[in-house]
Length: 241
Image 1 (cartoon, rainbow, N blue to C red):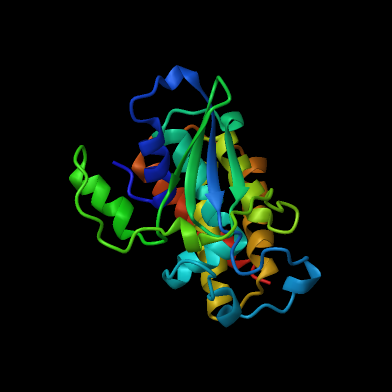
Image 2 (cartoon, rainbow, N blue to C red):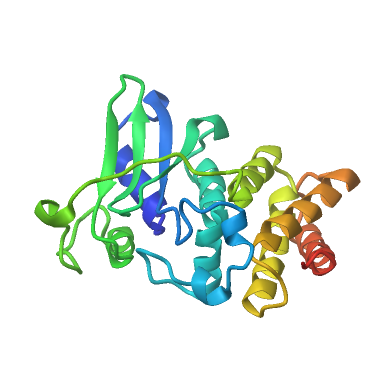
């Protein structure tokens, strides 16, 4: 049972439906604290600024990943595996209010959306209670005070990590492992003020490119992935900027 809010939402939207009639999975993103900014705006971003997520309260690593859209890229890869869905049927849409946790579009044009309060206790509780629904652990969403719901396409040119993650997932094999390891090193460097905010994506892209030049491998063992994880981390340290 998925417990991340996006995948839990998709799971609930799929309940009772024929999976062969699914046209698209819509994974929603808040857009993070820098939605609408340009690359020039992001050159001098500090860790303190990047940690201020507009709608969710999370740990440091995931907050940075949310701001770079890497977290959304990882969620796209997860959705591909969890729901056996090809990447061309998984789209990301920015929904700044974080009221819609994800949606499923069907062949007839109908769309099911999962809405709820921005609180992880809801999807976690459903994973525990399924197939039953227990009493709400938080105050439910009040549509009378919600206001408007906005939607926008993600800016993958400014926030390169989403495009990098989609590429890694599409190529498959050992590339997602390398991408993830490089990102962890780049984010840690940024949080410790050894690296820059824009340098996160640049570091990840450099390590991914090097791995692709050497040859992406078919995943065969945990030991293979551990060795590549260690290689990617060491390689990433060379590209901290």
